[in-house]
Amino acid sequence: MIENISIYELLTVSTILFFIGLYGFLTRKNLIAMMMAIELLLNAAVINFVVINKYLFPDMLQGVYFSIFIIAVAAAETALAISIIINLYRLKTSVAITETETMKY
Amino acid sequence: MNISNFLVMRHEIILLVLILFMLVLEVFTTTKNKKKLINVAIGLFLIHTIIGFFPQETASLFGGSFKTYGLVHFFKNVLNFGVLIILLQSADWLRDKVAAYNKIPEFFILLFSSLLGMYFMISSGDFLMFYIGLELSTLPLIALIAYNSHDQRATEAGIKMILSAALASAISLFGISMLYATGGSLYFESIATSLHESNLAIFGMVLFFAGIGFKISLAPFHFWTADVYEGAPTQITSYLSVISKGAAVFILMIILFTVLPVLNETWKIVVYIVAIATMFTGNLFALRQQNMKRFLAYSSIAQAGFMLMGIINADELGISTVVFFVLIYIFSNLGAFGVVQAIINQTGKENMEDYKGLYRTNPMLSLVLLLALFSLAGIPPIAGFFGKFFLYTAAAQKGYFILVFIAVVNVTISLYYYLLPVRAMFLETSENPIPYFKSKNMMRAGLLLTVVGVLILGLYSPLYGYIVELSKNIINPDLLTYLAK
Image (cartoon, rainbow over all chains, first blue to last red; front, side):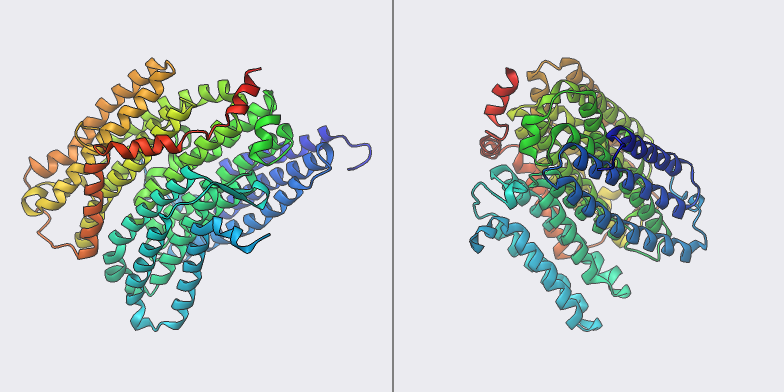
């Protein structure tokens, strides 16, 4: 817990972070930038878990444990995404989202 | 704690041993002998499937994180059976096409890891286990989608899948954090009793629903489906459309029924709207598809809409009908995908036009496809009809007659497009039809199993009685009376 800061401020931060991530995901044209936006979304969830655990249910550590798992899984997810993006770069020498438009409708 | 307690996780332990065994085998086999691994892996998985049928008592592990009971056990066996059929159907493809790139063992390791994730997901007892199971089932699957790394379409499908999967899991996590805030715990049992209807809880439920709705490809979250199904190797497409979707529907149903019964007035509205939207999008987009894989992708979206009709029942009848429908759906969809992939392996053709005159050259294959499509459409003597019929009764029992009416309208639309390939195969002729070819034994066995399943499942009523028996007492009766107060 942080003194003089209530749960409302912290949850506001995480919600703003979440929507920045969502906006970034929908507007970026570069695949790497989209992955960065996904990281923002996941971090918003992590902050939520830790804050809710610390402020509302401090007697058990469920939220904190959950956040550690989220960070680990997010790393695996990013590794897989980067490997596929590198494969696309090998085939097309570009990481723009416009390269992934051969299948439509 | 006695070590034998862990035998509760029999399915998971055996599959994990299988994965590790494949890893070791891959190190110690020379490149020349890698083809032999296909038979070894299929044989071992067959043994795993058979062992899975031994009975299992209700039990839980890790303080309630991992639960297993009759229905979960049965559903794991259903998934095993589906994967076995997929393995049989993909043996030829691995032997003829993949062997040149020297990555046969990876196929099995990744596929089994994904199945392991589904086991953990459907027997989860808290949101942490659920999340880990979901990710463990999704990530290896994405690697499999981008498996043909030299193929640009497969890479594109992989990118689309991982971006949407990551977005969906992030959104669903945000929702889970809100359910945690209102429920005070991550365990399903404690959330069920301590959750109260509030705006935060409803928002959390909606976000959670969106995340898992992506996996089932429900209507507003279905945009990845057709592209990924088209780009992925056909074997993986069939895995995506039956196993992955079936497991996700099952856990969505269990969570909605047992964890969030407090919000049932709200989630019924959500399920109602999404079901209608899903049925219409799936059916209307399927009308204009020429590519068989895209066509089956939209058909599988429409089928997911039908599954939601059982979920809206929110009772034991709902559980049994959905499980029965998923079981039939696995057989009929695997039959359709099996024929499509047999033809793709042999000739590389995947458009509906290429199927013209197929009955004259390959009568058996076209009959299998005919049965599978009739079952998907729900034509009476075949299993698919009974699956749909029970879903209608489940929705009608709770008075959702308008929903049933809309579903019937959708079945009529779907009949039209399911008959398009049938017309192409049986009635039309073509200058250069697909020439006659003989499938290998494994592929034949895989197709035969689906045909037997489609023909027998609907008529063999004790099976449905068995599922009904299993679905009793899953919804805690004490909880319902507690909520009624």
